[in-house]
Image (cartoon, rainbow, N blue to C red; front, side):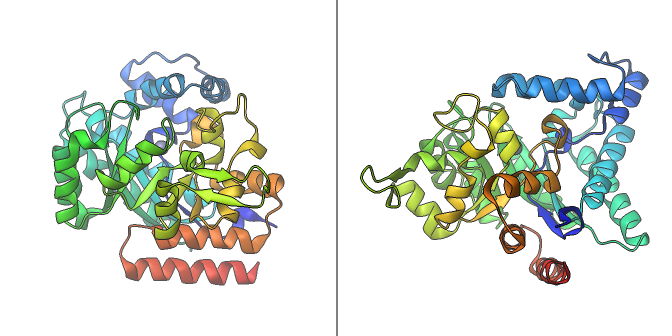
Length: 358
Ligand SMILES: [Zn+2]
């Protein structure tokens, strides 16, 4: 099975987590930013090692270097273009690109400018892919950081760019102690604007955080939502019998898409109750078998040394999936995508055709 050739959808992929090491080095040299390594392969290994520490805090620290080189027009366009070209090379036909414009203003650019520059890079990539006979659609997810208090401003930014490449709103950063209830009015406003929202929840914190994402954040998807498994209970006498808490019941019965990112979830300690987890400890398969709406994502390709193809390969090796399973994961993702219905139908047709031919 050549997974790379199959048409795929990526819903949870951070722009500042998907840079090419050689690009980081070139851009850092231009602006005089000091890096821990100056050789592309050594830098690639440094990112991976730093992110294997098992702590979300260490993991997030690596972003200091990637965001540092994404503070100029040139840097933003280049990073966005390469990010999308790399998706296409991996067989992705639709990618949602999430990032936090508020973290790209240190050189005096405005929120609107940075969003425009990223869209310019994405659009250059889409055009290049099209010219080479390929197919690629993208959509920006504009992220507000939980710990900052700019959610309303960022929400308005996302809505302003709705017809110009932005398809939704995301909420990221430290989960515990930074409930979306702090920005409930921004989420209510987004809801009134009919702007789709996805929240990071159920990664660094458990089911109560998922409940907050649903109730206060009005989220349509969960990034990553992996800790929903804490609200799923196996019967002590019969391990084939499960009981669901009310949050898990809601997520299951409403079909709320889980933006699972297997490798990243292992790295950030999002697997409850397991020290040094391996892929077989990831609840992906359990959630899938129980009927949750699972999707497969990378989160940060550079930090996890991965791609959608690799994530699907790892899951296939671990849980024995076949091509029908992989197709379902892609259709789940396409169904949960925030892009307009006409493009979504086109993407779903391409998935069905591509998998039928394989
Ligand atoms: Zn994420």
